[in-house]
Length: 346
Image (cartoon, rainbow, N blue to C red; front, side, top):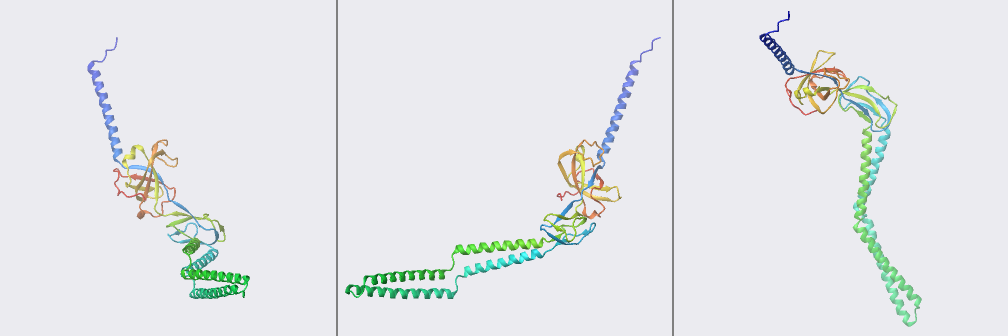
């Protein structure tokens, strides 16, 4: 006996039940998504403390290394020194050159001494007296030539002596004028340039002497002591490696779907796996360029997803030294973007 086909009413009831089940499932998924979107955004990253390689700008022999690995240093602390004796001697020589150039310039600006001017004036008077006597002798010899009491040779010699005496007068006048006017402006300008060059050399020597001391640029911790006293070092050769205490950065990544939930200045909470303390911070930078997730960062998304790099700045008041370079941390972001005070990136 053939089975009886379901009635039209039964088929309609089955369709209605299926539609109700689909609607309930869609509502459940929507509710779950809404709850997830309104909750805190959780990101993962690593502490990114900056390090500085400290080196002398001048070569020399290391005289002192004041700190060891692990020591805390403050900004301006003297970390190491070079043997400064060669640089002190170079500075003394440069300062002596400055004094020589200054003396030469002063002499040119003041001109000749009064005694030298008087000497030039008296030399002119002497030349004029000789010229007068030479002129008289020439006139006398010329008068005697007509009567035959003097020869032509004697007259010519008297003329030559007169001309030489006249030339001596002109030379003496020029010497007196030069002594009265002083040195030329070009000579003074050249002396000023020599003084400026000597002063620049002295400034360089002063800077080189100051560079024999290596100071800490900011508060930090010595993580490597590369040299020891007595070592010869070249310029720009690292002698210390310093980890800066502040600011403390956290490098994290966010996926494109969650990019709209954050903004520069958004307050965050940072927690490491080694302690229960929660650190406060804020997002200081969001990269404008997408990239692939680094292999060192664990997220709930696939590693091949494109993400955007974040820089999170930990508040200085919360920094206690427990966050160390490379330490993995968990970041929780408030649901509303920009809930923290918007500040310029540090």
